[in-house]
Image (cartoon, rainbow, N blue to C red; front, side, top):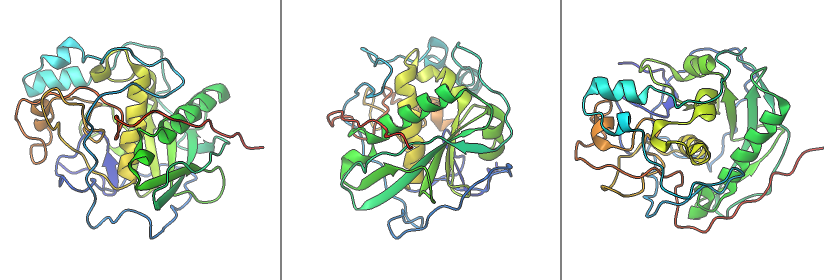
Length: 306
């Protein structure tokens, strides 16, 4: 099955090499997209890196209260053994409040900057955008604070010593983190596999976060919406940094942040959709939102512009 050229799907790549992110061309969306800054510090797309394997599961360093126990996937998803059962269970959003199904496909920048986080030589900047008309200014600020908290946490990408990240709200960032409506996400990310996804679009230079997932989460994380949001940010930003999808490394281990956790933490289930990368070995991981969950949590607040 074809997926759009230059788009990295969060949750599935039917044909994918384990060591590099999937790529494709997103469907056109009317958006004021600035070009992505090109730098020698950008990942080598000719041969991507492999995300670090986590050792333990930890809780989110984010404004919402962290879960005190490891979240458990919903029973229907955990027990799914056929493709039909898996697709039905993985396609079910958890119960929750309504979300914006459609939007105009244009964005506005959420004002705010942060100091540089991390000491790595591969320096990236990011801006935070929200699709016009899908939520209130207060909700925009909450989204931006969650993104900043996730990316400044030492358990995130800045904690490995390779990358540094800073938020900007002007100029041309390395990439943008964008909250978008359900249908805009499908237009940019594709919907050949009929399950809700977020994605990284290299053509647009955008980490596209699906408001449906942002509002409801995923069955794999149960009621732990805070940790799921951290996972969604870290996973998609991982694609922007050059990382591809990964399987569960061992039964009961924390899931790699580049595992397609929006759909499952079971290799057998993800093997239905990505047999070239995911082994059918019975391994089921524990949900984990961080690249480096063993690192101590440390985050800095966003500095509002103006």
